[in-house]
Image: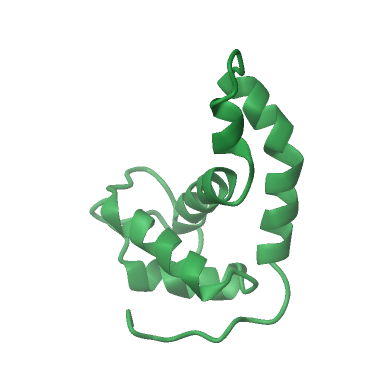
Length: 111
């Protein structure tokens, strides 16, 4: 599936998502890439491109799994919007790191 092409049947396989991650987010450690790819494969995606879907899922993954976002949500009186604002810079920094650098060692068990 080429970048920018609409998704057919609303489904993306984990293997397709992994290939996209390897190409456009080569700094993503394999353990995270596998989890992101599985999350993508579990959902139906209508009216989206592969790049958009990966962008949505990787951003949400980074926010929830690799920042203090979840801890902030447990702070009494902390609004979701405020927690997002507080971790926004951290999310952007992590995403920038994942998009550059040498590709990690990949195991092609999903191909």
